[in-house]
Length: 567
Image 1 (cartoon, rainbow, N blue to C red):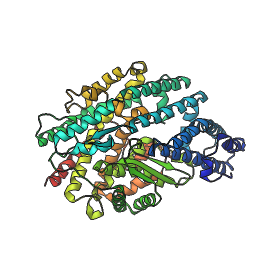
Image 2: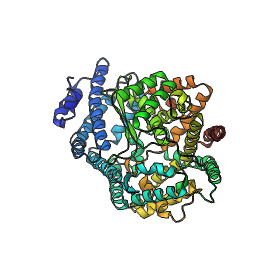
Image 3: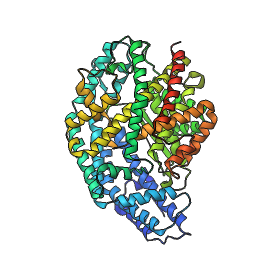
Image 4: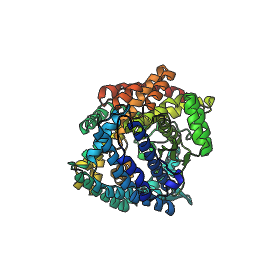
């Protein structure tokens, strides 16, 4: 297969690409030829995947770039639907051959599910959904406020929520929230169109609802919606009381009669906010030093990303919200996107997304792109574990960001937020189950507000939102996963439970824990989800027993860190 360089390929219309798929579709597939056939299919897939990734990066690093937007739309409208059809034809050819190449047990399972779900009439709907995702990014990316005669993005306002002066925090929080609430109209229209598209896709695929469609699309073979409900219940039983204790301690240390939303990010001892770096170059340099201490090979991976300009880290106007890691499989490189504004949160995001990047580097050694499709429930173990595995090296003794006391503060903040995250995750996940169980009701944003508010009160009962009800009940509109990546959120809760187990192993033997972690990453998607967890030294579970062990460990270390941070 004689493919051009990537730059030329990225400009090709489908008519130029189709002959390569036709050649593979017509080729004889035997036990002797399957490896070579798979290698050619994999390389063609790498070209397409990298094209899609690079075009997506271009529209997120600058949402105002009209030329990049046009290229992206041309690809998702003119190339991607045809490529998806061609990919399905090749998957069907392999499945029907009865051949099972080495390392293809799980990829073949996934292909069978995709073939069963695939409907050609869904392809234009997926294009429209992608356009709506981009529209969401454009609305949110344009949100700015004027603060003391200067324009800030909403993300750039986050440092003011750490100010010791409570009046400053409240003013900043209200300004940010009021600006976000002004976009309820356009976001409602996007939401309603997304719901309609998703329901239609499910109907086209002969599924009873979109949740059933999405479950199969996401390859969730190892747990069910009922398991998710059990996980929510376990979080309510085990984590909510622990989270309430953490917040009550915060309230007491702040000397407040009640906690308000703008009191959740400030240091409870009244110390100045942690400011770990002045600019993104410092963030890069110190992150690399930390990774070198976690594992020299991981440090070398990160160095490659710095050298090859595979990091877009600073926040700026017109940049899409959030953070992500994508990969360029043809180039065998990952790419990290984030919105750093100088907070410790940015350090955590850097560690998190780098875990994804290391996962990509480790799995690139697998010969076929189909073997590198990792279930998100484990992909997030890679990222969340890295946040914890790197935590002993945050101090300047290791080239990191902090004094020992500051590092203890940072680690304490991270563990407390991780604990508080599980209840929030339960709100987001339970809300999405309700949405797609009741799509007609969810079409009404007032009903969404009502359900979100009820879930918030169930899982997040401590903070006082009196007088701020509009902001509380509309929180679902500010959670991009609900719009952009439906049902993709429980993965974070499951993965955090896996990551705490990996970290618990590291407290006993850091070197062995990191070795097991890397071994699991290198498996890509060649084994089941429980097998991936086991390889990393963890158990895949959603029950109260294992959750209680994790919470007990976290609360014990929180207490130890408090002594250092407050000493």
